Length: 309
Image 1: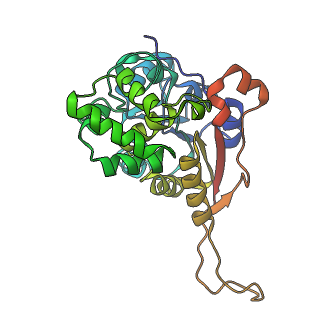
Image 2 (image 1 turned 45 degrees about the vertical axis):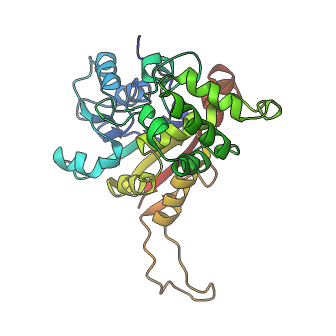
């Protein structure tokens, strides 16, 4: 299957990065290179794009798409390690970083990847296929208490206890191996009257994916690392697709902008507050109505931008 991923809020991201033709830019979630193609098109021969992805298939697809550009470096790694990645490349600072935290259309549509609750596929959900732990391991070996925890915290699932309990009952009889087997358990766990808010398995699949790929816990640190990798005036653009991600990004931005705790009547700061930049988007940017109509994935997307001081 061809690696297809329609970039969300492409115009808004490119404008947010304020690209300099001779600058150094990082796409920390390279994916199908939709955003990267627009970035590198705006660079001169002196400019450089660093594309990072934990998915080897995404990297191979991006290399094909960007084959005509010699000024691209491809890195098979996690954007959580951005400081180490840049150090290994002998790069101290960059002019801009983009993180699109969504799952690609290719990953959702490729049944063997196990991300989708539509149809039948194996329970996998690994962003990085070299990782040993899979969704099947989570579903079949996590304790009931741990399943409840991730469903409540990462999926905001109201029926987490019912779903976890029914998973335990089912796996005692037979190992749960496929996505459709898990979907049936979820459907049986949620009253029909409560299944009118999107697909009933959406929140559970999201929770398992987040847990498996460790998407939330290191995110605040990743955002802070990224900000410290920017040159003065450099921009960080992050697209999130659910509230957990958005809250983590917002929290990191606020902390890096600096929170002064001095009384308001003091003429200057004495609390030692340090600011590393400013939040450009006090409210997140959302996709236009036209884009939301054309690309349903963009409906939940939020773009937040930070500028290094």
